[in-house]
Every structure is written in C-alpha cells, then in structure tokens.
Length: 150
Length: 150
DNA sequence: GTAGCTGCAAATTCTTTGCAGTTGT
DNA sequence: ACAACTGCAAAGAATTTGCAGCTAC
Image 1 (cartoon, rainbow over the protein chains, first blue to last red):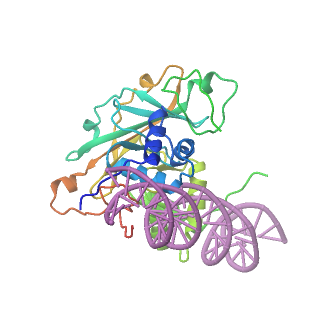
Image 2 (cartoon, rainbow over the protein chains, first blue to last red):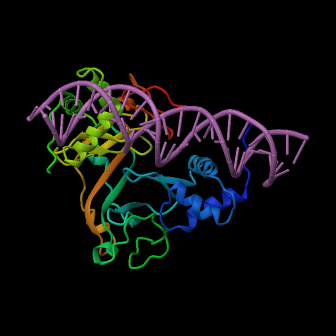
Image 3 (spheres, rainbow over the protein chains, first blue to last red):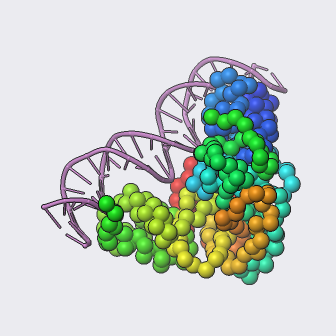
C-alpha cells in the first residue's frame, strides 16, 4: 500500500512560502505567509506538511538554541547560519572551514555537522535603530536593507 | 535591593548532578539525579535553578536539534559536541577549527559560534554492544535513559 | 524575622492527533 | 469512488508561573 501523495493548494503554498523566504521560517511564520494564498489554512496542516517535506528531504530544519525550529529548502549550496542576538534575525553564511572529522574522537563516524555563528548583524552593528526582536524575513546574508515584518 | 541568592540543598544537588555527569543533562535527567539527594525535589525547581545558573554563567545550555536543551558546567576548555544518531548520546569533542569570522558577511560582528557534529559514536560503530535507543528519526527522544514517545 | 526558596498545581506554549467532512486522481 | 488531505478542537508534552508554606541567613 504505497502511499501516494497528492498535490494540494495548501502544500504548494507552504512550499512556496519556504522557497520565497531567503531565510529559514518557523511553522508560525510559514502559516502566516501561506495563509495569504490559502484562506483558512490551519497550523496543523503546516506541521503535517513540514514533517512530510522534511522526511522527503525537500526541506531541512534549522534550529536556533531556545527557539522554535525553522525550515528552509534543502539542496542549497553547503552553508550555515548566523543568528543576530539583537534583532533575532537568521542569515545564511557561505563557506565552511570543514575538516571537522579530525576533531572527533577516534573510532567515531562523522556523518555531518552544523555550525551556528551568533553576534550582531551589520544592520544592528551600524544602525541606530535596532529593529528589536522579529521573525526574520528575506535578506540573503546581504544586510543593508530589509522590509516588512510584524 | 541586590538580590541575595541562597545556598540550598536542592541547588547544591542540581549543580552536583550537572558537575558529576560527564555530558550535558536535560532538566528531566538532572531531576532524576538530584532527587537521589533531595527527596521531593520538583521539576519546577530544576528549571528555576537552571535559569539562575545559566544567567549567572555557571552552566551553559547545549542544544541538539529536536531535543530538549541539556546543560553542562561552564568554564571548561573550549569544546563542541558530537551527537550519536544511533544511541542518542552526546559527547564532548575537543578542538575547533576556528576562523569562523572570515565566513561571516561583511559588517557582521561575530560574538561566538557553536559546532555540532553528528554520526555514530565508537561504541555504535564497533557494533559489539550497541546501547541502542533513540530513533534515527526526528522525534523527541530522551537519550541516556529514556522511554516514551508517540 | 523576613526575603528568598520550594513543591504543587494551574497556566502557557508548542506540536501532535482524532474526526468528520472535502478533494485530488 | 476512495484514499489522502484538511480544519478544528482536544490531547500531549515541555516549560513557566502563582501561591502558601518553609528555610537559609
């Protein structure tokens, strides 16, 4: 009984929301975005779809300590994340120093790694107007400008 | 009005539990350990104490994606963690390739970083006596000694 | 003696699940 | 048609908070 997955408006909206954002989004943020395209969309559907997409390897969870998991499209170029402690935004950062294998204890089998940088983003460093806590939106690791959010 | 913090039996037991374990412990695990020394200890006290200790910089939270935060003593030599996907155990790994600053977008101020390696630990690789537990899937597991999931 | 703790239970917050109705194929 | 999908509400699980009694200082 191979499960056949259907293409529905809500799933499309959820995938689009994740794809359109330049940064990882939380389930709540995904709901807010997707709701604009599918009226009445429920949070449960977002969670169910997220699990489906994650299991299918289409999206991957990105976790920031102390916060709800966020999701981004899989298949991107290898990268990690930066978390601004001042505005709360999450950016993608290219590059990776690699060579983590050599630091693992002998006999351990390294399958992968995750790196999270944190500090203050360019906006907060230079800005006089700290955009205080907010759900991150787009901003491909390229500071300088950003727009709307709650 | 400086808040004077008291030394109590429960706080001592909680700190001891964290100090005695060689690896980060979850609030639940800390409770189980500390309960052996302080009868009737409540989980709320563990959480409250953990927050206190964390704010005071005495312990630091260690987060494994999809799991409850764990805590370990601060002040150790710079290190990161390894998460065995098979047995769920968390190990400390020495060393760090550093040089993360150069990978951050221009203008960003890096205050710190976190690295998490994952794969299979030596015990699981050797396969003799795999202390199995914790699914290789995304679920709320409870490494160490756990039970339930749904 | 008193402000700071503590345990317990109720309250929150986040995520999952049970159902009955809806919809993609 | 019919199983898969959806929204809603209830269920769970993890963490926080309100309180009245207890305790370190």
